[in-house]
Each structure stands twice: as structure tokens, then as C-alpha cells.
Amino acid sequence: MPAEVVVLGGGVGGTLVANLLAKRLGDDAKVTVVDPTGMHVYQPGFLYLALGQANGRWLVRDERTLLRRDVDLAIERAVRIHPEAGTVQLERGGSLSWDYLVIATGARLVPDQIPGLSDGAFGFYSLEDAERLREELRRFAGGRVKVGIAGIPYKCPPAPVEFVFMLDQYLRRRGLRERSEITLLSPLNRAFTIESASKLIQPIMERRGIGLETFFNVESVDPSAGIVSSLEGDKAEYDLLVLVPPHRGQGLIDASHLGDAGGWLPTDRHTLQVADNERIFAIGDGTDLPISKSGSTAHFEAPVVASRIASLIDGSAPRSNYGGRVMCFLETGDGRATALRFDYEHPPVPPQPSRVWHAAKWLFNRLYWETVPQGRIPEVAMRRRGPNRRGANGRREP
Amino acid sequence: MTQVTDVTRSIDARGMPCPGPLMSLIGAIREGSVGDVIEVLSTDAGSFTDIPAWVAKASHEIVAVTEMDDATAFVVRKMR
View 1: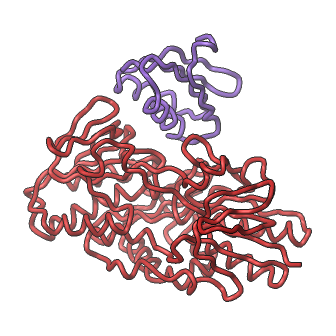
View 2 (view 1 turned 135 degrees about the horizontal axis):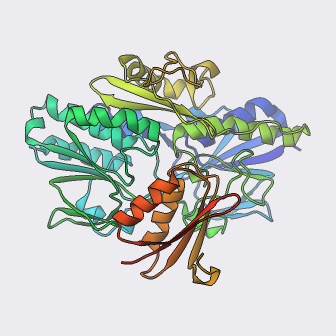
View 3 (view 1 turned 90 degrees about the vertical axis):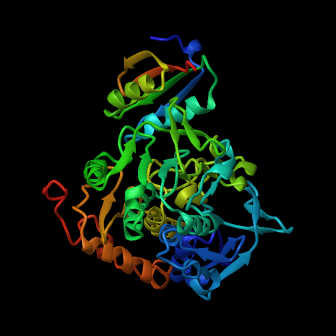
């Protein structure tokens, strides 16, 4: 009898782990992906969509077309995991049994946790929000733009910084920059979570005339007055407010009593096993790991989980561990970008922004559908030592 | 050091890199009530500057900073 592997979630992590397992195990495993929509969304494209640089249709594909033929796809919503019974209950009735379970259900946006956010702020963390922001930006005739973060953790930590840089470029191109102020409301005492990246980013913000307000954790929005308030007691007036909404784990995790208070899965940082469950693994945005919530993280985690499950099935000793590896691009506007490559032990030393990194990101965006879900990105392309090995301070990266 | 009974909520942020411990504290303050005493255990050197700076900015109170064998305990009272 083949081992039954169920993968919950058809995003980057779920799709990749399913394809890798089916390829490695062949007839020794039956791999099923369960996804409520059956559509795979390329979330890094939302930023470009909001700024009129991408078409929404480019960002969505049928999940079936990304999976190997020997992987089953169930277009169903999973509502409850029963670890003891080894089953997952489905919304439309029935259940699937599993020998090994991979939870790759991601994070959900909970804008209603912040009073006034849904009425008073725009965003680019969903396809619908990015399209709505694109239309609002087309109507925008200048004014005070505030860009902030309404809850931590959130997906793709560089995105708000990328947004302010790209918005600056967008408004200059439209002749509106002179009539506009752009301010990043940062929850920390610097522009970005990672200090080395902040040191690179903040001087560029200054040169571009982009304001930075620190220790501003959004608490509420007053849409009628055009004021956003912080947990620290500050207020900021806006004409256009763009916020990253609060995130939490999926309802499925809460219903299954597997998560912490935020709905995040307690996950072993190296083996990616969910606490106290040897046959359940978690990858991607749904974990509680102290690492970026991003497609890149899921991309590097998926081979580890596939390898460990394959070892458990074929009886060999699991050897693969996740070291916290992440690789992100960070757009700095004007056709330039930098790259953040790091892991649990090594903070990033980002190179000076260049056209090469911007071109690399564009290439990645274009090639994503044919490479990442199938595991076709060559290892060498994602190493911390990339084409530019010198950091922003001129030092060679470790 | 604050008595254990005074602590409303304790957060074990040991091993979390910067700014994880501070973000955990901010999350706990966001969810807590005025008067709550929150303890954060951190092994990150950045917490020595980040946490007091944020607590001062947000007008809360540092009750104690205690260095232990394997971590530092930052105890903060929510003041408003």
C-alpha cells in the first residue's frame, strides 16, 4: 500500500512539496493537495499590480497545471485536522486520511482587528485590495500619503519599503511628486526589521524625500477625519492611507487546536515538525518560526519536508534540516533593487541597489510559473553568495 | 526583581532574533489591559536598547531588567 500524504494548501510551499514528494517516491506514496480555490496566486505580484506595472491575470493560474500528473488535487476547504485519527475533515462532508500531513495553509488577513481600517485604508496584500489601490492611485491628484503596518508578523517584510520607493517613482512619473508627501510609518525605531537592511534603506529614503516616522504601530483609523493613530499615542493625518493589515493563522488551525494565540503553528525550527506530532509538518506563512513570512521561506522549507517525509516512508534516517534560509529581493525604485540573503545564524549583508538585482527580480517574476512550483530553480541561483558578493559596506559577505 | 505573582503574562522570546522580543512585547501590550505586567525573556543584545526605547516612547513603565544565566528578563507595566 502506498503511504498517503495530504498537503493542505496549494501555494508555493504546498505545490512544491507535493511535486517533490511525488517525484521522489513514485508509487510508494499517494500525494493529495487540498486547496479551497484550486487557483494558485503569485502574491509578490500584488505590489506591481497596485502600481500599474502588472496585470491581475498574470498573477493567477489553475493549480492543476502546476502539479505533476501523479499528484491529486482536491478542491475542498479543510475545516478540522484530527491528529490522533490521522484524518482531515472537509467542509462539504467526508474526510481524507493521511499517514503524513503537510500544513501549508498560509496566513489570513484580519483587517477588522483594527477599527476603521477597512473603511479608511487601502492595501496591496490581496488581489482585490491591490486592484482597488491601483484605481485609487489613478485618481490621486497629490496629497499626504502614509504607508504603515497594522500588525506583526506580516508577510513579505520588505513590501512596505518597496512600496514607498516605487510610489515615489510612480508619482514623479505622473508629475505629482511635488504636490505629495510620502511617509513610512514604521513599527520599529528604524525603517525595516533587519538592521543591516535599514542602514542601506534609510539614506535612500532621505535622498528621495520620503519621510520616516518610527515606533508607529497602527492602533486605529478615523476615516472621516483622515487620521491614523498609533499604539504609542501618536496621530498622523493622511489623504491616502496604505496599510498592511494584521495577519493571523488560518481558522482551520484554531478549530483543530494546533496553533498558538495568533493561530500560528508551533514548528520545530530545523525539522519543521509541528510540536508533538511526528507525522505533521508545517511550511510557509503558517508557522511560528522567527523568520520572514514569504514565498522564499516556503520555497526553501519544502525540500526539507519532502526529504524528511520520504525518509520516514522509505525507512532511511531523515537528515535534511532547515537552517532558516531566505532570499528576497527589495525594490528601491528607479529600476534598481537589492537582495536580502540570510538564515538563522547569518544576518543579510545587502549589496548596493543595482539594475542587476532589479533585472533578476523581473526575471524571477517572469520565470516563476515554469520553475519554482516544480523545483526547477538551480541551487546556485539562490545561494547567499550571489553574483555580487560585496555588501553595502564594501565587505565581502560571510 | 518582580515577584512571579505580579507578572500577568510571561513571553519566552529566547532565541528570537532582533526585533522579535520587542515585537512580542508590543503584541502583548496591544492585547493586554492597563496595569498588566508583562515579562519578556530575551537573548538578543538589541533588546537592551529596543525595549527601553519603545517603552519610553509608548509611555509605559520598565519595572525591572534582570540578567539571568541564559537570558535577560524585561518586565514592563502597561500604563495606558
